[in-house]
Image 1 (cartoon, rainbow, N blue to C red):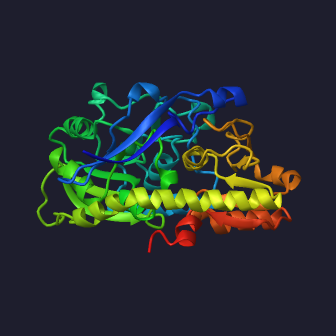
Image 2 (cartoon, rainbow, N blue to C red):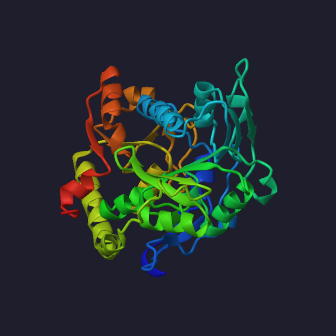
Length: 388
């Protein structure tokens, strides 16, 4: 692995709920050393230590309170149900989070489901009449090999796993001779590199895939990829695969290695330019005596704040997830507030951590009678010309 990006003193969890500012400031940190494999295109945090991470009931990751994400999630579930003809079938979801997607698949397709996630919260789910879904608040391991299914789904989880081939081999072994279809969704690494989306580089994400490396992994684990796709304005990469070779649905291997290597080479300079852009913006805000907040208190927000070393330049982190409000950001100690708190804060600038929510956030601000300047993390790329 060729190391191309490093960072020190990075919070080892970015979605953990921390009750006090002191606890947030003292939260354990680790290092990032992104390495690139020229043979397959895999990118990994070579400094990752799994013992430093925590996935539990206080890991609050859901985006399900956003109307924009809700529409996407429902649409994705409908397309998955149609694409894989899921009706009256057994579904396994690995890394089901709070269970929203599995419930959509089972309710809309009359399927039977089981979901694994150590961060699942039973107190957030009131089972409906006739619901045939079971949740296990634990990791999916080799002890779970009796959970073979017709359809295996795993969304936004593989990037958290350092030993990806071992993990995928375990998933394949659990299916045995059973004919099963597979659907995985993860962050798309080439976009992160090309756009220098440094807010998407954080400790929990230890494994990064582009189409070529993802196909390579699935083939090496004994799966037969049938489709590669992109979702959510290109932020997410999806792969569909079978446990046997259907022949007709076989996917031609992707060939993005050369382009990926080029963006890896450019990343250090792009990253430096991004930091320069944002530091200049915050210097301007300070000179004008203006108040700024970030919107989005999850992983992207933690990475943005800690990468730039921001303290009193940001008044608060806004989040519409009520389960995050009142807590504090790991590493930086910023308080997480609800959008209604902005009426009192009256920010001059709101910096959106995910550009896909920009219009939704602008509408929320207008409803509150506020009209601050709205920026987004990708404004740095456009503003400094780094991606040109």
